Length: 231
Ligand code: AMP
Image 1 (tube, protein in one colour):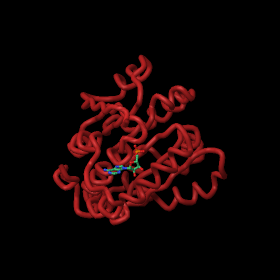
Image 2: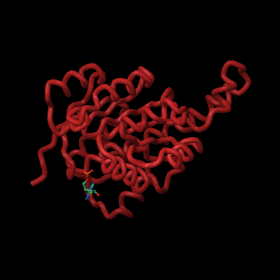
Image 3: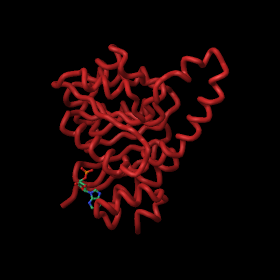
Image 4: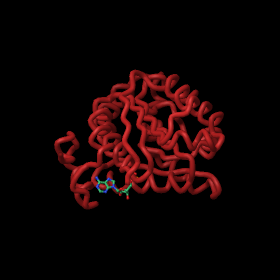
């Protein structure tokens, strides 16, 4: 099976072949078609399985598919005073990827850059432990995709450098680690700021009761995909 047969667009296939991948990994084979369909997903997968490309590749494509719709809606809205604000707003953040650590955030952001290099989408990453101002500058210029750790994301929301009201796709990466690290309250605060109607992808290496509870609340009729640990 090839990446092409999974339904990915030319620009994404080019980025994948630039990277030297010849065949999708098991999680990619299963996840990519499901995400492209717009379904929610519960993925049981560890690092090393190729899960990052498994959600990033179809996420990029979904954003490309809805990009023109956003642009034309904004055109129509430009005459309407209620929506003047909307029209003058910067490029909205449409996809949010939450990760437990800054290392993982940086890795995911790098993958988004790599796989999206032939696409006109913008992305950035925010995490704690470093100065907030350079992150703010990037957010203020406008991004389509934001990769973030939960605490620093909430700092940006409270300082109004991030608006989460236009999110179409949410990814919770390594959700079990986020819970282990005590991020549940921050995650719940973030969830409360997101639109109800969105696509949600949750990845976790383990399925504790807490993960099951969170996914039960968050995911609508999710596809369940589980792949074994590599070697
Ligand atoms: P991840 O599980 O997302 O952290 O990915 C693990 C590693 O596998 C990363 O170094 C990726 O660059 C690599 N990788 C992802 N997908 C493929 C693929 N289809 N073929 C070969 N390597 C891949």
